Amino acid sequence: MDYRVSPFGDIWKNGIFNVPNELVDRYIKMASEYQLKALLFILRNGGCSDSSSIARALGQTASDIDELLEFWVNEGVIVANGQEAATKAPVEQSPDKKETEKPAVKEVISAPRLTPKDIVAYLRDDENLRFLLSDAQRVLGRTISHSEQEMLVNMVIYYGLKVEVVLMILEFYRSEKEKGKTIGISYINSMAKNWAEEGISSIADAEQKLQDIARGNRLWNEVVAITGIRHRQPTAKQREMVDIWFKDFDIAMITLAADIMKENTPQPTLAYVNKILKEWKKKGISSPAQVQAEQEAFAKSREDKQGKKADRLKGKPSYDLEQIKRDAMDNTEI
Image (cartoon, rainbow, N blue to C red; front, side, top):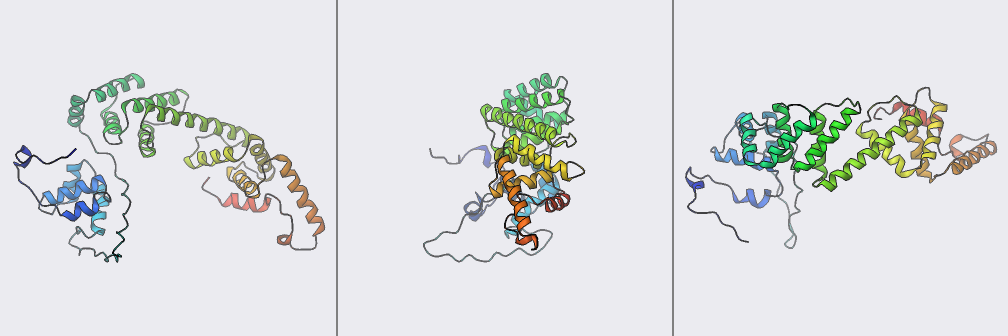
C-alpha cells in the first residue's frame, strides 16, 4: 500500500519547518522515539529550545530530556549551552560495503506524566482503558488514586501491554498481598516495565511468566529450608542464582552443598553454597557418590604427597573449604 501526505489538509494551516533528509536517512532506526520527538520539537521552534519547554511538551522531566538529547549532542546535530558541535570522524568505506548499521537506542526515560485531564481524554476515546480502571478498583477493593490511574494508563499506552495482561499483574499483586508479602503499589509498575521489556504480549505469555514466578518462589522456599538462611524476599540476583542451581543439580546435591556450608561457616551463606556448586559443575561432579570419590581421592593424594606443597597435589577436592570460605566472605553481591 502506498501513502502520501494530503496536500490540502488542515495539517498545513500553521506553517511548516525544515527537517534535514539525513535525519531520516541515518537516524530513523538508530534514534529512539523520544529522541526523535525532542529533536522535532527543537526544529519546530526555530532550531532552539530548552529542557523545561521540551519536557512540558513531551510529558517528561527536564533531566530525562537532558539525558536523551545527549545523543544528538554526541552526534553533532545539536549543541548544548553554546558549546561547539561535536565532530564525528568520517567512516572509510569500500565501494562494495555499506556502513554498519547501529542498533536502536534503548529507551531509558520514564513514562510520561498524565494530568487528570489527559486521563479523562484517554478514557473518553478508549473503552478498554475505561474497563481497566473500573476493574482495577474491583481487584484492589478500593477507589484508585490519580497516580494509580496514571500508572495503569501508562502500562497500556506507554509500555504497550494489553489490558488483560495488566489485570493479570493486578491479580498477582493482590494474591501476593493476601499472602502477607510486604510489597507496595510501585511493585506493579516495575513488574509491568519488566514484562514490556521481555516482550510479554499475550495472555499465554503472561500465564507462562506467572508460572515461572511461582516456580521460582517454590525453589526459593526450598533453599531457605535447606540452607537455614533467614527467610526474606530474594533479590533478582538471588532468584537467578537459585534457578541456575536447580538447572544444574538435583535437590540431593544442593542439600549436600548446604550441609558442607553449615559445617564450615558460623552463619548460613548462599555465597558459600554457590561457590561449592560452581566448583562441582566445573569438575563435572553431579552425584553424592562422585563427591565422596573426589574426597577419598583427595585424602589419598594428601597421604602420598604429604611432603610437597598443596598446589602440586594431583588430586584436588571439588571444593577448597578455606578458599571457599574466603571467597564467600568477600562476596557482598549475594
